[in-house]
Image 1 (tube, helix red, strand yellow):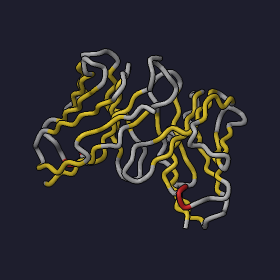
Image 2 (cartoon, helix red, strand yellow; image 1 turned 135 degrees about the horizontal axis):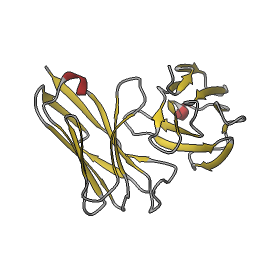
Image 3 (cartoon, each protein chain N blue to C red; image 1 turned 60 degrees about the horizontal axis):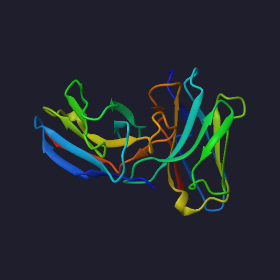
Length: 114
Length: 111
């Protein structure tokens, strides 16, 4: 089945640093989603991307839909302690936008040293 | 609280026992999903309901697993004859046409 590969698997940074993570797929996705999951909680949607090349921001977060449709990037600027958590990329497999299930990457775990 | 609600939050059971999880979606959401998440992995799709109809099931949903949504509102996920490999977080999510909202999950530990 289709898989999403996230990199890096974990990051240890200092508060105030910028963060970059990415997600790649062997097949095309027509939608890319970025979620954050805190310990003991369900994932929460951060940013949704629907068009190749699209660059979208949500506060200090910026995500891009890769031109090839096979990758996406998430950047966090000026990290703060509440950014700690696991970040997942996700998308509906196949060509049909609005497909009913999502495939998730394995996550990037972000740890911040104060 | 008008979010997706799951019960119980934690369940510890012995191998071979049956367990049932309940999900109450956001009230106007007609679409309901179950996902499973094991340690260090992202959520994996299990099954999907539109109203009371179960429209898609993953190959992960073995015959020991059954999900229902009898009145198109709350849903239950039952696991019969639990195995240690069933230990995971079971996440419920719901949506109408837009964003998927996840519950906090039900964590299952099979001893």
